[in-house]
Length: 171
Image (cartoon, rainbow, N blue to C red; front, top):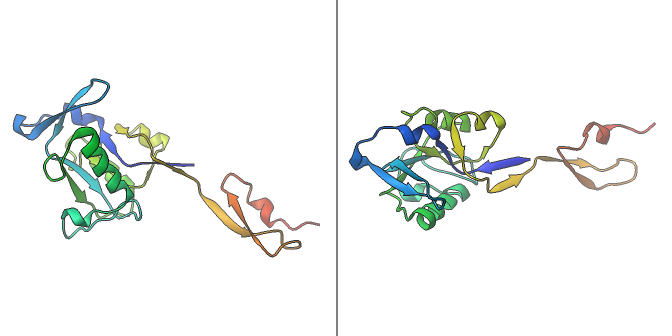
């Protein structure tokens, strides 16, 4: 099963020293408060349909996709943040979300958070970031031809199924 999170934030961010005029206090519903950089830099990359962006422009219109929209709505509704003031998106050219993670984890990284289609793994959970609750759970499956002697149809096989048994020919 894939658990996709749209936001990972470095734990080290709360200890980063910033000039007082370049921070903003965020109060969570549980009463916790954090000092975060202002603007908060949210990095993403092209992993359609969850996120897409242009490395040639950082215009608001160039950032699209489900993860982008979820972040915008959450930032507005939960934090009363406005894009461009309290946070900005940055497009990172990469073929893997591990690159995004590497740019968030160090306290002096150029990203304060990242959003993209990212599977939450045990290894990534130990990397020093706080993951948002996943908002998409899925699985990987394979479409195979059904029993070759009795059917001319197709079948859907979940990854947890022993795929070898589908290709075994009966005696």
